[in-house]
Length: 397
Ligand code: SF4
Ligand code: SF4
Image (cartoon, rainbow, N blue to C red; front, side, top):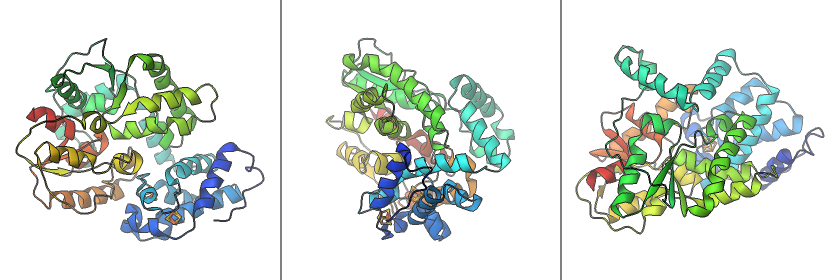
């Protein structure tokens, strides 16, 4: 794609990076076929190729109109388009850069700005989020339907295992996961204990994804530096850092890209990301004998399109003896996508219901996934139990 970047922007490193991504796109449109928002809305501008043109226009004109911003905001950042693209266009990175420039040149409606600011203020702060969640859970039966669907039932910790200070495996607690689904990391600790692997839980706080993907790059990067400051001094003492929420895992894997212009943190970001593994990679060599259950596996976008681990959980659960049910459209997002289910509720609900129809076609007794957002979002639309795959394995051990 030929570009003529605006002279005011041409010297900015981020713009040069975006320009290089834009130039890789040959506007073939293959990506459009796998884009969830294009499938729902049928509008070229709600598909990746259209959004790429909108970002190109923004960087060429140094301006953007409100309608174009809406099309960018409707993107789930699921990155299905990246998996499909034959030219290697890093769409996710381009969108992050584009949204930052769009946010500086436009003003979202007041309510959206308020909601976005409230989410960014509350969700990453466990000291606020956890009590608010607990109070909402007490009054859940009295809440209006929209709020109720966003308040998960209280999830007990079924597998408490002690941390060991000498452990060579660090488990990240996460922000939302540690309050909403604390049994996930406890389940991983139980599995590791069963194979005599000691682990240590880290309270690292928010990985920065929430701010960063809501176009608050500075605040997002400040959170990333905080996580790096905590993990980097421990790297020599550990073999692996494990995130059991793929949404956080994919963000930490992206730290080197996001912080590459920061001379103080670029190398540290790379070192931290190099030690990061997903639980499925950590447990792949393990032999277990599990029985029963018809399981539908929903692989989060962050896992399949972001971390490139599509099919790995399915392969592992099958190897361990569980029966998996087949389903269509595995590549499509469930509509959770971080804060998307709150900021774009209609599209998000359509995608959730479509995903559940597909997942439940094989009449599974349980649906498993690998990310807290997908888990809670899917559960809000079905009576079928939705859990993290680590919880299922720990229950069956
Ligand atoms: S598939 Fe890749 S090259 Fe083709 S239009 Fe989409 S982003 Fe551009
Ligand atoms: S990231 Fe997902 S929603 Fe956004 S353009 Fe790509 S495929 Fe469509």
